Structures are given as structure tokens and as C-alpha cells.
Image (cartoon, rainbow, N blue to C red):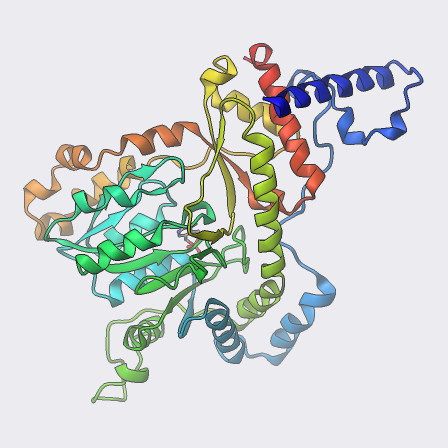
Length: 453
Ligand SMILES: *Cc1c(COP(=O)(O)O)cnc(C)c1O
């Protein structure tokens, strides 16, 4: 309570300074950081924004450091996958401490291919989270399987391990833990359940580069881990993805699959030459890999900074009633913080709606969003269950949409999707004072909730 009082007093003092400056009175304004002159009036109502500068832009690109490697590739004329892609794969596997890495065109196809190469598909059920990006579930229906939704723990934003076993049936074949927002899932119980029921584990680590659970990198717990290098992600290449695994036979199948089904390693086959299996083409280019290698140079430093700023920001905002930041599981020693999430309780803000809170926070100079809609309620699931191939393959009782919806109801996730607010990762590349000012911005909105309604 003490710190809350102090903050209010702090804001009041700053607002007096602000008035003094505005009235042209002789206040010692030079003693005060310009940002701290934010008056207690919210920016949305005409006050000074808590943060008056722009945030670090994304993606980061340093011409002096980053362009020589890229130019070398461009001038070589070797643009299809070759040594630079090999080098990126070697580096990423080494960083994660895993045997193999295969790059592919994007994270979506890393997931699609991983399920396909473990033959998770027609006739199978796959356990998924309703709180994620579409690709975490579309990979299941892409392969002909049926997604089964496990409700979340709203405190951590992740699939709740305590709710997994009740969803397991004789058809359950795999589980996709998604380390959503870059916050780790609770891997010990998930892996224990997977072992007990003999399930394939495909980690969707598409937001979880360098995050660790029990001092082990995410993406290395399951049979396979999938990553994305899309432009907004913490390793931006424009587009790109990767599959990592310690399973050589699986990785050989993935390599073959990503290269038209051509022979590779243990899938060379007896009948060569010629494609040995169903394949497609998912190859990364040399210039994407050159961009990726440049990004890897700063990933460690950026990740460290995001972790430090996230814990500072958390402590700055959790004292405000109605603001509940993420919780990390006890064995998490590092997150990736692709996003910084908190839950917003509008009752504590005198009924100020989430969308109005977001508008007010944005006008204070803090980028923020309301995040995911429930995946289990999206129309693509109805379309899938009604599709020609699903109707051919599955008994009609299994495809009854109303029954499916009822069985996959996730009430905690429904509520989470109403309450969540995200701050994007580039904000966490700001400085210590920036994090404090975000706390000031939220306090201002809290104090003025009534007039912001
Ligand atoms: C971005 C993302 C994907 C898909 O990756 P793309 O490279 O955009 O195809 C999958 N899962 C999650 C959780 C993601 O954030």
C-alpha cells in the first residue's frame, strides 16, 4: 500500500510541476525529467503523455554489422539453400543444445511437417490450447486429425497441465504445448503425462526463442520443437521457421519432405534415384539465413534485456488494483517475452472497459493490444468438421458441431480472452525509466478511470 500511496503523491507532485511549467512560472523545471512532467490528466483527456518518445523500432538492422554477410550472399549468386542455411541450422542447434535443426519456410509449415513426419493425422486426436495463434491448431486439421482443447491457467496464460489427462481418449496421439507469448509451459507434468500415455509431443516454440525451463531450452523437451522467424518475431528474417529434434530418423524424414521427397540420410531408400516419399518444398533461402545469422548475434543480449525489463515492469504495475501480470512457473529460469501480458479487471477501474483502457494507455505512449480470440470458437473448425474428407473418414457422431463445441468448451480461456492485454516485445528493449513511466501511465488511468469512461 505504501508504494501505491507514494506513486499517487509522485503523480500529484509532477502534475503541479506541469501546471507550473505551463503557466510560465519559475519552477525549477530543469530538475525534473521531461517525461515526469506528465500531468495527472490522462493524455486521452488532453494531458501530457507519460512517454513522449518513440520505442525501439523492429526489426533491428545495423547496416555496418549486418550487411556484409548479406551482401556476400547476394553477390555470390548462390541464393537457394546451401552453406549459409547449413550454417544457420548448425548454429541454432548448437545454441539450443540439440542434435539437429532443419530450417523451413515458416513456423506454420514447421508444425505441419512435424505432425506429418510423426504420422499424426487421420483418426487421431491432438491436445491443443485455445489461447494461441491459429497455426498451433490449423496444423492438426491440416493433417486430418481432430483438435481437442485443454483449458488454460489464466495466471500463466498456458495450457493447464492439471486439465490434460481428463481429455485423453484411446484416440489421443499427440500433444502440442505452445509456449505462448514466450512464457514457458510447465514442462515436467506435461512430459510425464505424455510418457505415461505414450503421446508424441510437438512443442510450438514459435514465440519462445532462448526461453528456458529448468535450465533447458524450450523446443528441446518434446519429440520436436518448432520455431518461427517471421518479421515480428524475436529472430526476424521476413519469413522463416525451423524444426529441431534429437530424433535422427525423424529429421531425415523432415529433410526429405522439405525437399520434394528426395532421398536424404536414412530415407535414401533402396530404389534411388528418385523421390522416395511424399514431399513438398519448404526450403529457406541463403539470404534469409544470412539475415538470421545477423539476428542471432544480438538475440542473447536482447533476451536478457527483455527479461530484466519485464520483471521491473511487472513490479511497477502489479501494485495497481485490477492489473494482474503473468505468473511464471517455479522452474522457469528464463522467458522469451515475445509479449508482456497482464490481465485487466475493469471492475477495479470503475467499470472502464478494456478497449477504453487500451485507448487510454496507447495515448500515454504505450503500445498495447487485446490479443487472441478463443481458437476453439473459430469458424474454421466448423468448416473442417463439415468438409468432404472429414465426412468420408470419421463417424458422423464425432463430427457433430454442437457436441464438439460442448466438449471443447474452455470457460477460463473465454474469460482470459476478455481480460488480457499485451505490450509488444520491442517496448521491453527500452530503458529502466521507460518501464517506470509505463507504471505511471497505468496509475494515471487508474486515478482517472471515472472521467475516462
Ligand atoms: C508465429 C507463430 C506461428 C507461425 O509461424 P509463421 O512463421 O508465422 O508461420 C505458430 N505458432 C505461434 C505460437 C506463433 O506465434
